[in-house]
Length: 261
Image 1 (cartoon, rainbow, N blue to C red):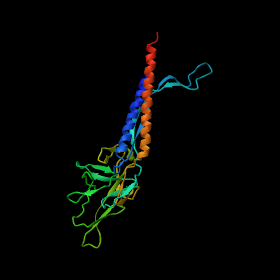
Image 2: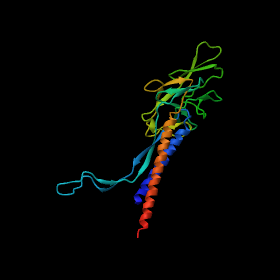
Image 3: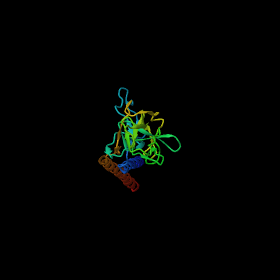
């Protein structure tokens, strides 16, 4: 009787974590380059009252065992790195990755971070930076007299001014891939950092060695499907509700047991 109370409570706690993941996805439905999360569940240890194959007589054994479960828990939040749709902005510093890979940016402490959000800008020194002001790595500076900026599919950045007839290359945007991108650690600001699970970054030219090519004048949108998240929201709500009803039913049964004469 008391076991059902704890099992249902674990189900309610798991659905709370599921709801956290869904709400974060919905909240970031308009975040450039955001990748949706999913709560992963796992059943808890079982109490084995009778093992399968237990000898019941000299010539017979039980065809199945008797095990009682102890509930559920959330073991992780996996992230889907499927391609999001792209929006054409015609902004020369907006860049989307078509395929696998991440832009490499340099944090304030000099360590690298990785992002799918390509809504770049320039700072006071003309460096190409993220919306948070982190410069891309390697650093690329746009001359103050540049009249146009062109970013090729391989990341080559070229500029022209009023007196030039041919573009001048000022740098190249590189991208990084990981053996297991789902193992990257997200720490906000549209940024990820490598972990032991993700493996080391493989940095190189876009469009080579399974890296995606770059598309200038576009931004990759979040890969969140709002309709799908709403269905998940309903499932989480009903799962929470049903588990709460189990607790109510167990409480009523306990009440009936205590009133026995």
